[in-house]
Length: 465
Image (cartoon, rainbow, N blue to C red; front, side, top):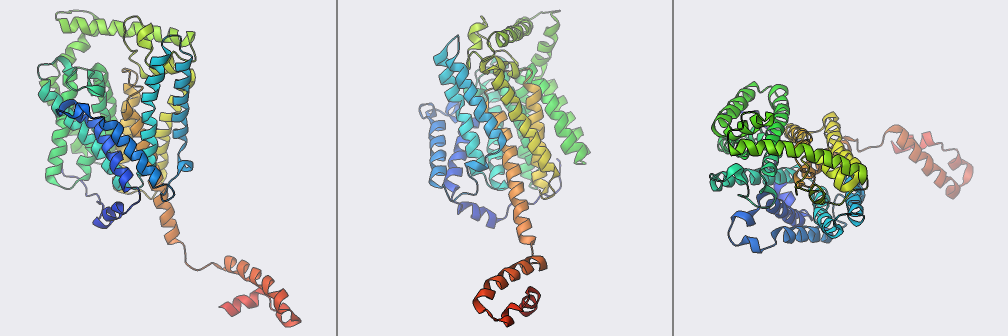
């Protein structure tokens, strides 16, 4: 069991203030949207599959924001530059859909569905105006993915690679592994930020379950993603945070889970060479590797042939094998065009820039610093994993950039409030002199007479004193 440094928690007065906030209703429905998207309750709770939970929660969150217009701290003008990049990327995806040589209708409606990520992104930035709220949203994502990992293990013990155990964004083993890796740094942050022993145990168990589910997916991209993310986490939380015991604990967890559930993953890595293919799983893994190489070449040819893009989701048609290219950068370039690819890179580059600016600000507290490290690890994990998985349209990476934007905005607002409080209530001498001079100029024509004109600003200043 790992005991960590105490981190200040939100007071009850702060929580009560959140309830009186005009955005309380919008934040409730935004939280519901995150819960529905991340936990997918309709896929494992009977009866909920007939209720459009995601649409309901998103609509009510948008209505709550509109009803509170004019009473909020942030407006549309306050949206950061990355929001413009995201909007431009969506627009170019619509253009590629309208110019698509393959299937315009499918690409258009696919882009329309993906545009919900932009709405969720804007709502996240506008509604989350305090670190307590940001922490709650990140908690919803982390806890939801941990629950998904447990449910996948329990329901998919006899299912190869946990494929199709949970529907939607978790139906593909690579997508499930990707979601787990992008949420693991937040679980580490919650583990280190709490002082409660039961909560530490709960988060440690969640991390173990998520690692076990990741190994059971036998996702090679997910494992490579885990190595990149894990290295950054150990640097921030272990070495830089002076928690050397955390490195030892992480090594033990990976070793134990790898030995218990990593057999299929080892076989899939061994199958890349094409030698000693003894089982059907190894043959399938080698065929998948060869197929991915072919799809990468096909995507590069598609980019050269259609630089404006072929439309979202249409690469599976022109590939001839109904498979996506397993590189997110090539996926967005071939389907959205070169312009969308440029804005895609600029958007995620802003996430790193936000964290860099945040670390240069002296006003953020230890808990904000802890979660900024988790966000940095998440973004590094995405950048690495995007080379090996088709995750250009999954919401989790866009959520991570939204968290960086919100965290930076909160730090700026906090720094501005502190500067206003620390400013002296009385005017300094130059400011007082300028006001006295202005007052003397106003009084002179009214009072008239040489006596009044002879009263200089210095005399007026002495009289005010």
